[in-house]
Amino acid sequence: MVATLALAWYLGFKVLTNHSVEVMIISYLVFLFMGYQWMLGRRRKIFQQTFPDALNILMSAVTAGESLMQAISFVGRNLDNEIGREFKNMGDRLKLGEDLMSYSDEQLNDSPILSLYSSL
Image 1 (cartoon, rainbow, N blue to C red):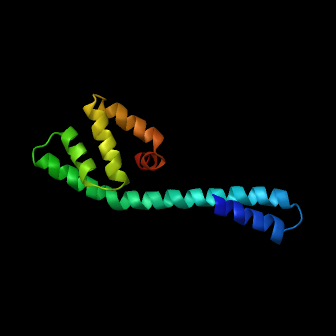
Image 2: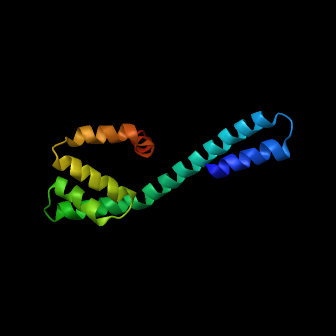
Image 3: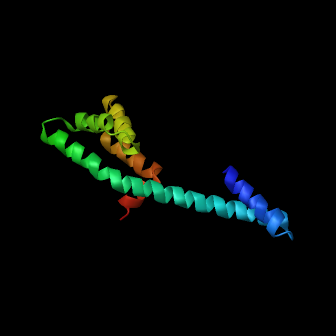
């Protein structure tokens, strides 16, 4: 965010001296949007790379005779990344008695990546 502001200031005051404040504000918003899109793409790529591992661990645990709730918690304990933290959070909330369907509906509304995949 600071780098975006510095780049916008440089463009506004050093490169384009006419209407420098407007150029600075517009370029700040453009660079902020570009950074957000880059972060979203990076997060999507990490999700695509690590989610199959989570599904394999989940399938192995269920095949070994664990319940779905225990398998979800197992994935959360064994993966040390964003997917693992999400599975751990899901397992903790399921242990507290929350319904799986209400939790998954909430996650689809909150996560731009999951909502993207649910609409495909």
